[in-house]
Each structure stands twice: as C-alpha cells, then as structure tokens.
Image (cartoon, rainbow, N blue to C red; front, side, top):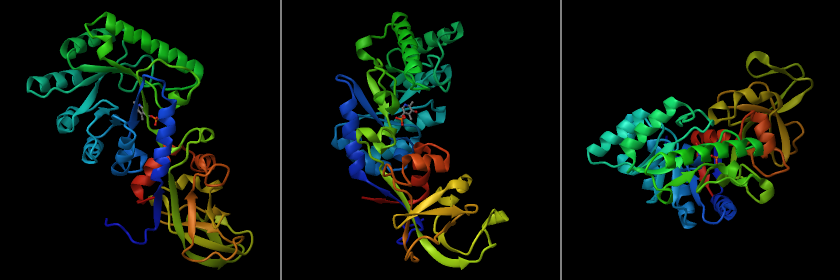
Length: 371
Ligand SMILES: *Cc1c(COP(=O)(O)O)cnc(C)c1O
C-alpha cells in the first residue's frame, strides 16, 4: 500500500536514540573484541534502510541478519562490511544469497555439502561453524556425541579453507548458566582447533548477545552480536532509551448507558454511564487481541483503560475521566518512557510478551515515521 497521509496507527522511530544506544553499547564492548549489529526482522521493526547509515556512522563493520530479503536490504542501504546469517539457511537461500556476499552458518552435513558444491562451481561462501555446546539445540552441531564429532570432521574436511568463524548462541544469560555454557563452548572450540588445521588467529570465535554484553559475567568471545540493545529494550538504568513509539487516534467519542455491553461476545458490561472512545488501532496493527483484561493507553497524559475485546482495526477505551478529549487526539499505546504507563515494563505485562516481539510486529504492520 502507498504511504498514508493520515495513518490509522503508526510507529515513530527515534533515530537519534538508536545512535545513542549504539554508542553506549560500543562503550561496553571490552577492548579488542568486535561488535556485530543484528538487523534481523527489518532491524527489529525499525527499518534496515534507516538503521544501516546510523551503524555505519559509528564504524560498525559486521551485521547479522536471517533472511535473504534482509541481506539484500542491508547491501542496498550501502553496507559493504561483513554480513553474517544468524541461522541455518536452506540450499535455495544459500544460492540466492551469493550475490549479497552472506557468510553462512554451517552446523550440518547438508549445509556443508551445499557450500562445497557452490565452491566447485566457483562461488566461495565464507562459513561459520555453528556449535550447540548444550545450548539452544536450534541449528548448532552438538559435538558432545561421537556422531556429532563425526559430522564435525566431515564439515572440517570439506570446508576447512572457508571457515572464518566458530559460533554459538546462549539460551540463557543468568550468571551461573552463562558461565557453564560459555565454558562448554570454549571446550568445544578448543577441541575443534586441536582436531583440525584451523588457525586460531584467523578464526573469529563468537557468542553472546545484548544480554551477554550487559551481564556481569565476563564471557570469552571475539565478538558480541547485539540487536535488542540498539533499540533500548534493556537496561534503561544504563541510559539506553526505547526507540519506537506506537500511536493511534481517537476516531470517535460516544456516551453509553449503564448496562451496555462493549465489543464482541459482550465481554464487558458498563457498570455506570460511560463516555467511550474508539481508537484507530486494533489487532491488525499489533494491538494484541489477548491483551484486553488489563490494557490501557495514554491520551493527553491520562490513562484510558481498554474495554472489551480488541477488534481487528479498533479498540474501545473508557474516556469518562479524560477532560476535553476530542476526536483526532493522539493515543499512545507505547511511549517507552520509564516510570510512566505505556513504558517498557507495563507494555510487556500488558501484551504478555517481550519488547523484541512487539517491536518487530508493530514496525512491520504500521507506517513508520522517522524522527
Ligand atoms: C537475535 C540473535 C542475536 C541478537 O540477540 P539480542 O538479544 O537481540 O541482542 C544474536 N545472535 C543470534 C544467533 C541471534 O539469533
């Protein structure tokens, strides 16, 4: 659809805050270690084209993505540094990503064979050996078993010249768990070096995400791969700021009597005469349908509780207590400022999920306005 001059709901993206979060994050990276900016899910809903210039301005030379569309968008935005895919790719994806110069994860024979055959056809794809290390059991190779070690030997045999990295992803960043998983990863990395001709000084050993970077537990890694931290989802106490606001408008106001029911399935019944506002946002805009019981939005600095079930394109709120609210007024679903409603914590509770989930959903469903 074309850009809408009067969008029903929209995301305001604060580019200056992304830059300031990045600066803070880079300041946390221990000396000599690298930083990879994770821009999957269209930069967590913020728009790859807008975020790439910001990370380039601060010299970030590595980007992580998952889909080919993201890889090509990152290149199209002018990024010519290292581009790593953060999951296993299908053979078709690998073929299609050659033009974007994507470095692929290899944690299975199938991917190794695919990369090997591409090389025979004249296309060398750089690879990162993905280890599970008792971690996510997502797409990393578990080499604690004899079977896994056999596969590892085959991968190393096929791709030894093309492996530029060894990586894992931590499932949990609680200190004790992180310490154990990081140690088990390092043991497995050592095993790989002992059992191959790979040269430690030429290989990037990387693990750890935003939560690892802000953890008090020091973890051995050559590079941190961080997404969440750029968008202010974590550690507001360290100065990180949320980077997206979600807003809609009051589309109509009406007075309804005591006993009237509100919304589908008559899920809510008015206990008194109320003035209700209908907002131009619904579950199609990412205002989750499962969120109705304790949800609220902010209108003119006041809280307006959501009543009844969320509809596809509208939400009804109680506006009785709001003075001089008018049709066309802004309603803030997420404003992000700590200590207020529509902040990080209240919003995660209200929508029963994490901000990364909400950001990527909101950003992809609504028009984005860049500040
Ligand atoms: C998403 C992802 C990251 C970044 O995680 P954040 O918590 O957003 O920093 C890092 N590594 C991998 C493999 C990922 O999938």
